[in-house]
Length: 234
Image (cartoon, rainbow, N blue to C red; front, side):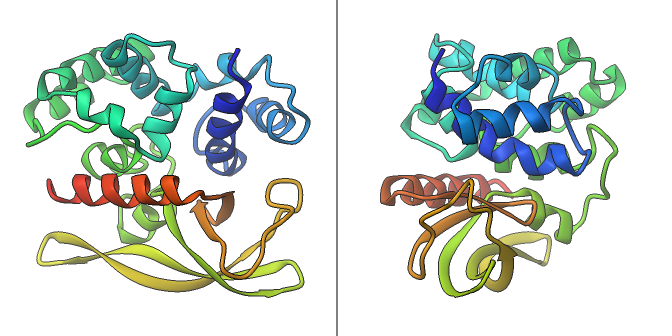
């Protein structure tokens, strides 16, 4: 069991799960326990019940010939890494097969089959934009607001006031049916259990209004690169 990989996946799964958008109710306690207490033995089972996440982990696992709970797979999906370069357009069919296996309705998978992407990148933002945030589960409407809440946004902490951090986040705008990056400054609560050393100047990742992780320079570089790569197809 790769605890660091499961902790990374947990950090980005907690917020949508706590909002009731994906996964079982039991996942919130399991993922928090993994991040905070290093007890991760039930995380893999919980991830298998995330209707959008699990098919990507299964797909990347096959592409990389690696465990779906390995660090290279989980990091690749959430933050991006060089392993995503190994995916080809033919692997899109693997994802669709895994969607069916996960229980996603056949008519919806058929729609995805008929709108084959220019490039297949098994990365979270691809799911958000190509498949469509909320379209698999029906949990939220598909619009610019939910796209920005669901994508892994990143940026620098510019101010900390008690339990609130002000962050200048890379976000998306939509103009003439094209998406591009802009900066949006907003405030988010600080969870001391997740980011106890957070300080002004740190670069963080935010997912569904939660500060999920303080990013290393390499993670920031990967997230920026793969976000831009996905946007080339939209």
